Length: 239
Image 1 (tube, rainbow, N blue to C red):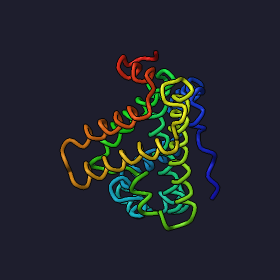
Image 2 (cartoon, rainbow, N blue to C red; image 1 turned 180 degrees about the horizontal axis):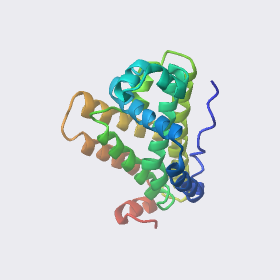
Image 3 (cartoon, rainbow, N blue to C red; image 1 turned 90 degrees about the vertical axis):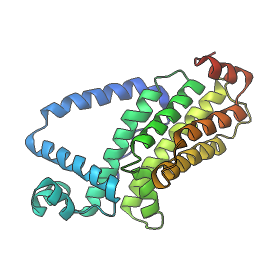
């Protein structure tokens, strides 16, 4: 099954157009005919199930039971378990964009935008402590299992990483980070904070994990920041 191209996240300057397109799409949902509404309801339930049980725990039968539908009724909307899993990944990615990426790129270019992306990412992880992050849990499930589901999941994660890396490079262009900043290394360190946060907050249930993640981000930025960048951090606005 071929995955449609993901939203071009790295092009942060297209946020206004992208947001407008999404607003129009949301408005159009009110006009969905019954079949589309049913599919959307099934997808909502599937996403909730996958968050609790993982993508591998998602099945047509389990979903039919939750929806109080026949298996054939659910099957008619997705066709296969694989298609269902990929649809859930796409829906999760769409919601991640709406909650994390698009609001963040409305901030000023450079460190303000970078900081907003990280903070919104942290908030989303904190909201998923009881349910789990499909990006993270899915990576554990499919890291050594090639196929369309893994490809779909990897494409979504890579799109988000590319967006964050682009934000880091913009911060360099704006003079907020040192010219010799290794964007990929910085991205690696920031992603490591999110993985540690998810582990300590969800698995170990350690208090203070959110504050430690934010402290870690401040240290990373402080290591790479220029004098101009530090002023931006202190004032909370572009300098």
